[in-house]
Amino acid sequence: MIRAVFDTNVIVSALLQSLGPSSQLLLRCFGGSIQLCVSGSVYAEYEEVLRRPRLARDPTIIAGTLRTIRETGFWVRPIERVGICSDPDDDIFLECAQAAQAVYLVTGNIKHFPLSWGDCRIVTPRQLLDALSANKPKSVS
Image (cartoon, rainbow, N blue to C red; front, side, top):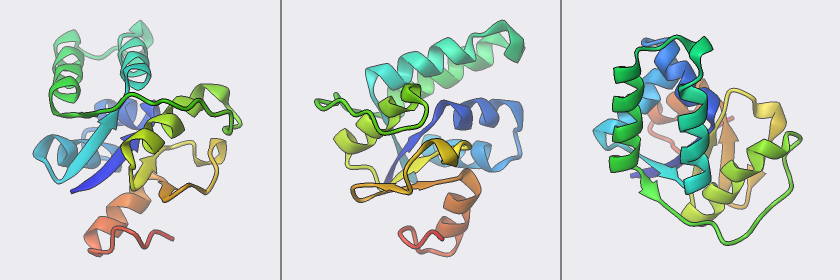
């Protein structure tokens, strides 16, 4: 199973576009083919952003999504703080990826991140879907 960390924008996109790449990836996490890696900081950001009124999502869908992430996620406790991203709020995702030894960090804001972080590749949802469909999880271009 591939370990991946999802930036909050991927989770939000999954709830806003039910047929989009982010939604397809989240469903793979919930189905067990991708192991979604989560830290306390990452989960807290998911929860805070998903509950913003401007997203206008059904509270039961938000609660169900958060519950499933909580129950199926691979939980880690990062021990090292980093200051690498152009948006400092995104560093929590690198910290989580490092602690989880994730293969991918998936984001819609790829410009905020380095190209890779250790052995972890930083990719868009579409790039990860393409890699998975090609059965070559490590060969994202």
